[in-house]
Every structure is written in structure tokens, then in C-alpha cells.
Length: 119
View 1 (cartoon, rainbow, N blue to C red):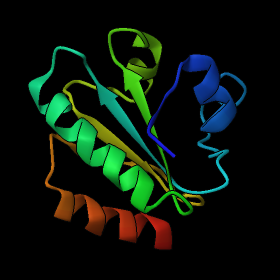
View 2: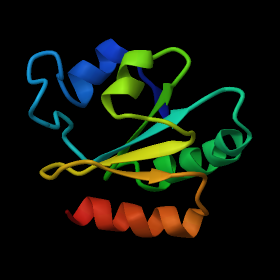
View 3: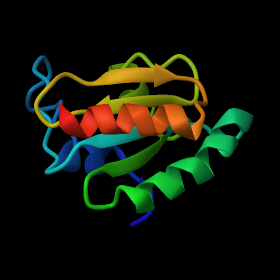
View 4: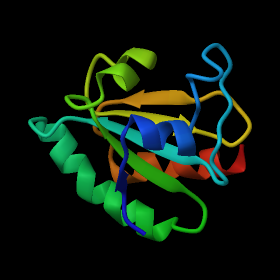
């Protein structure tokens, strides 16, 4: 598995149908997910990308990792009030999502992932 770039329509099918349930978070994935809000021009985003690729392989059976280009998906950025990149949105299966802003070392991401998959 590799990190998957997703569009608004993919997001609605795989993560949350905010058009149908705009006020109620209802995660649709079959396993927890991380959504990387990034920009192609962002240096820290470029540094984070290979780490996320590695993690997508290491956790392929336990976690989905998606990427959303903020310059392409304005509506999704507004939905989550994304104001800086990279921003990682952690989506547990049965709880509210939470964010981690900025490029993080792999060790921090592993800790967060292990917490995420046990929620």
C-alpha cells in the first residue's frame, strides 16, 4: 500500500460524507486513517512525504493514509479549518478526529499511530 491522494468525492466515500451529515462526524473507513493536508510548494511537506510512505507500508493492515492537496481541495481545507501545512488529521474509527500540525519526526508519528489504532 502507498499513500493515496484523494479528492473531495473520494473523501466523501472513504472518510466522511459531510454533505449528507454536515454537523455530525461519521467516519466511514474500515480502519483508522491519517489525512495529510499538504502543498506541493511546502518544504516540510516534502520532508514528511517519504516518512508517510514508509509508515503506510509498515502499518498497511492497520491504517489508511491519504493526502489532500490544499491548492486543489479548498472545500476540505475549509471544512477542517486548515491554516498551515503540513497538517495531519488523525481519524480513529469510533471517536472524533484530531490534528497534529507541522512536520513531525517518525518516532512521534509512530507513537500517534499506535495511539490511533487502539482508540
